[in-house]
Image 1 (tube, rainbow, N blue to C red):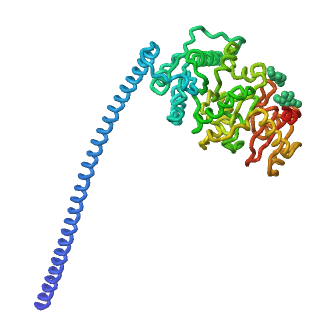
Image 2: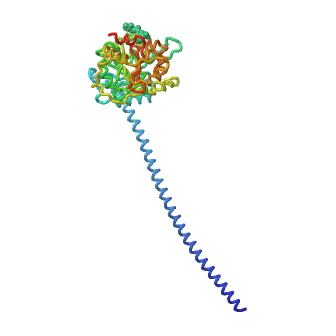
Image 3: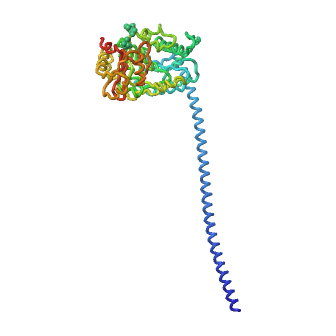
Length: 446
Ligand SMILES: *[C@@H]1O[C@H](CO)[C@@H](O)[C@H](O)[C@H]1NC(C)=O
Ligand SMILES: *[C@@H]1O[C@H](CO)[C@@H](O)[C@H](O)[C@H]1NC(C)=O
């Protein structure tokens, strides 16, 4: 009995001992786990502190930069104002004849005038494009901005470019349209053109003027192009003016950056006229629609214009919503030439009337004649040039629609036509000639 009690007590002690040992082990583990966590927390707290101090540093840096930007903007504003004041002063002094920064008028090949009105952001884009290619070599082109009206932002933008002379047309008399429902804008534009051209030719005595509008960008060889083609105007009396525009100059219809053409249709948009022509036109200058007036044979008197295959200016102005569709179809896809052609070394004598006629006669007569309903598909299957005859305006318009070129006619002449021939490229270097019944006969008359 007593021994049983002893062994029972012994068992209890053993159990207790085991319990104590387990307890101690658990405590030791707990302690080590706790201290490990404490270490980790300390590391985390330290990392967070580091982050916070870095963030503060960044915030400090950002606010310093922002202050710098603000102060630079202030300086820019002040410099712009000073620049404008100095320009105005310079122009006043020039006007009073106190100083002259003018070149000898004989050394100036042509004036380039940007016609502006109320679109400062457009004007800026045009000015930047002109300045980009107005290199020292092109410095015989004198630059002008002519503003119609008193839009303040356009004025200060124009005055902020010292490379440009600023002129301002302020029409004090109210514009009267001739027919009810007409847009005053067409009258104001014609007035402004007349005023600007008269200032440049009659007062400044310049020899040639290139007209740009405030929604145009120019090609890298714009100046060289006008210099080279200007020679033709002097020697060939059957030419009226030079244009840097092709109405059918959309990417899908053009290939050759060197090719130039004669056209009975005034292309407008970035064009050059001489003093002689101005003297002829100025007494008759119309009250409105000056460009359509230049397209009348009565004004043109059978003379032609030179135009490139690939446009030397790009019209980026999407005027108003009614023009949106027109812009997307005809202006947006225009290819602006990006190949700087060395115009000085290109022989342009093929453009002289007689040579050109026989050259074109040759090309047109060698082209494969096509007719019928599906000429567009048939043209695909022919390797070389193609000739398609149209009988009248309605059949021309149908063909133009099928190919996607301009349908419009003015005074009996389709856009881009020369003696009834409208030429464009189709998919490749292949030319399509749309010709009327007398085109070939007219080309062989010399
Ligand atoms: C255009 O004008 C010229 C010269 O004035 C004239 O010879 C020619 O016949 C006219 N052409 C047309 C189609 O009226
Ligand atoms: C062809 O076009 C020329 C030039 O525009 C024009 O003088 C002639 O009358 C036209 N011929 C026909 C048949 O339409």
